Length: 457
Ligand SMILES: Cc1cc2nc3c(=O)[nH]c(=O)nc-3n(C[C@H](O)[C@H](O)[C@H](O)COP(=O)(O)OP(=O)(O)OC[C@H]3O[C@@H](n4cnc5c(N)ncnc54)[C@H](O)[C@@H]3O)c2cc1C
View (cartoon, rainbow, N blue to C red):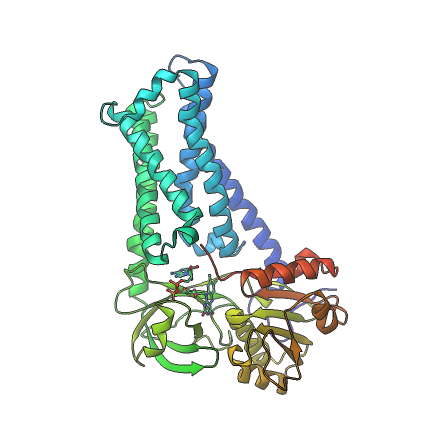
């Protein structure tokens, strides 16, 4: 039997879109691997310079591979919507982090092997006296190590997000540009004109990608401004912004997707934050974002005047009921993680969905429950929805669930009764880890558990 979404499906049936995503996703992985090894393979063609010993050649090969993997990170993090779509942006960011470690190990192995083979080469680390090719190589390496250290230990170093992000971008450009120049100056595999041409094409492609991300994309955003149409204070220290496109049609999105928001007159800013769209995907002309005051920027959102200029980059994300056919959905949320679920539930309501759904929503206190009145309205309306609130610090007289969301609660409220449902989980990291483990232990298969983490760094 083919399962489709209840009500209208906006595009092709879910299983068709799934196979297409698999195909496109596999094609991008193939392209990625081809691009990662291309410099090494192409420069190894045709007339080769005299061969050196095995360790030197291995070290050079690792250097080339490390550099192409580093350069590809610019494409991985460019928020190219078609590239991110098959996997979801959090998977892409996870890949970016893990492959960064692999690239760093390869790049570090390059000089380490050379130094072990010939300790006299250690003199090249003295950038005051070393030749320019070594100066560029060493500076590129130091920038890379600073990049990785400031990312891995950002929390411990208490680096605020925005300055870190600016430094991350600058260090990445320095690391790659200096390494490219290092190879150019060493010139061992670039001795033929066509190889120099190939190297120039790679460098130009990289500069073009940077220009696209930093100049073309903001220019595209500037042509599609939005205005803040309403600012609503909500429970749980949150604010909902309703946005309307100005002079364009806005965009269509899948329920549960998110967008990067810029508040202000210019899209040329690093001050842009991702938020789930908490309104119905059936009303794309006026998307809403529900924002919890967590840091300096989000704490000022409630002061935004109506009519203020905004920019929305998106939609992004794979966390959507429209991607997974099911007899119904169970949404497990903690804190502000409820926002994509309210967007999905509002959409299901607008579509006249008749399947049974559950929400399990945990916070500390009753006052922290975000959009509680809206959840109660949805549960009381035509949607077949039951909402279970779980408070770890319940007020006197609270008759609902207490403590934390755990395996016992999940079994009682959802899994025991709805074993074939698809599960969505969103909330603070520890809560998500507990819920994902508990669902697996309760026998829910991995491909029916979908999670979105609000921390991309
Ligand atoms: C896919 C996704 C969907 C999200 N949906 C919502 C939502 O619907 N409602 C909501 O209230 N929050 C949501 N968030 C979280 C929200 O983006 C952060 O709370 C917000 O950016 C914090 O900004 P700040 O400067 O006030 O806080 P800070 O104190 O500066 O940052 C707190 C943390 O938020 C993250 N963060 C900060 N700035 C950015 C940025 N520019 N880009 C990415 N991460 C950043 C970092 O992990 C940082 O450590 C979502 C995050 C993601 C990744």
